[in-house]
Length: 161
Length: 161
DNA sequence: CTTTCAACCGGAACATTATTCCACCATGCG
DNA sequence: CGCATGGTGGAATAATGTTCCGGTTGAAAG
Image (cartoon, rainbow over all chains, first blue to last red; front, side):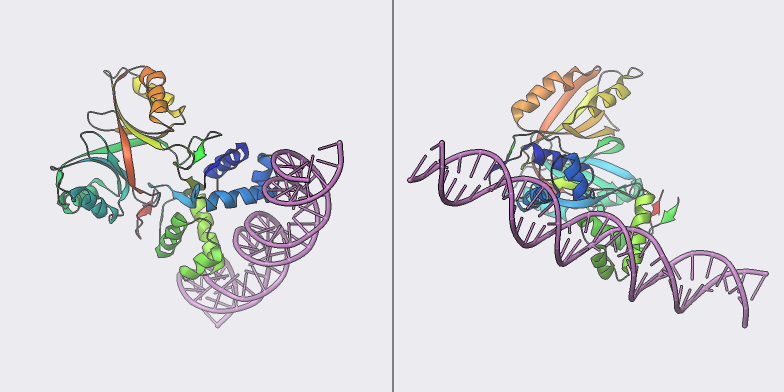
C-alpha cells in the first residue's frame, strides 16, 4: 500500500489533527475541494492506517491526574527475556501512558500519570520496582508540559510505508 | 467549576478516549443511559474543559516521520530569562511534540519527530543547539514505542479542578 | 489525431446521527 | 398537600455522513 500523500491529503490531515469533529463540508471548503472527494480521502487514510483513530483528548488535571512522572529505567545485565518481560509487565499498568525503548545507557523511558506524589510512591514501590530485572529507576516530576500535541508536522511527498 | 465525575461521566470518557467517532446512541447503550442524557454530559465535559478536543491520531511512520528522538537538555547556569526563552524557542519548532520541564539535573525533556537521522542531525545543529543558554543535549533514539496511548486511567470520584 | 478506457470528480439523493423540544416524573420545600 | 425545581427520555427537527451517477480529464493504444 505504498502511496504518497499529496497536498490535499496533508491539508485534510492537518485539519483533522486539530479537530476531528469538523464537518466534512467545512474541511472540503477550507481545503478547496468537494464533500465527496474529501470523504473518500478520509476513508482511504483510515483504511491504510495513516489515521489510527479519532479520540477525545482529556485534560489530565481535570480528571484528577495532576502528577506526571518521567521515569528512566535501567535493567540489570540483560538476561534473554528480561526486556520483553518488562515491556509486558508495563503494558498492564494503566498509569503508564508511554513506554520507549531507548538506545544508550538507559533502557526504558516511561511517562506515568497519577493523582498525587503519594500515589506515585505507592506505584513505584508496589509495582514498578518489583518487576524482575529492574536495577535502577530515576524518576523526575514533569513540572510543566509546555508543549503537548498529538499533531505531527506533515509535509507533502513523504511516503506511507 | 468544581465538580466530581460520576460513574456515568467516567464510562462516557472511557469510550470517547478510545473512539470519539462513536455515535451517541451507542455510547448511551453501552453506558446504560439515554441519548439525551449522554449528549448533555458530553456537552458539559466539553464546556468545563475536561475534554480538550477530539483529534485524529496519525501513524507517524506512515506519514514519513519514522524517527523519534528523546532529548535531554541541560542549560548553562540559569540566567533570569534563559529558561522561558528556551521554552518559547522550542514552541516554534513543529518537530518538537512534547516539552517537559523536569526537576533534577536535567532541565528539559523533549520528544522530537523527524523523517530520518540526517534530518535530526540537521535539526540538532541548526536549531536546538543554537538556542541561547543550552549547555548540553543528550539525544536517544526511541527504538520502539511499546505503549503509546492518549487514554488516561480514569477513576470515579476524582475532582475536576 | 482519434478512440477507448479507467480513474477521478462533484452535485444531488438518501441515510444516519446530532440536537432540540416537550411532556412527564421524582424530589424538596413552604 | 400544592407548587417549584431539576432531571429524564421519546419524538420531532436539523445537521451531517454516505452513496449514486452522469460528466470530465488524462493517458495509452490504435
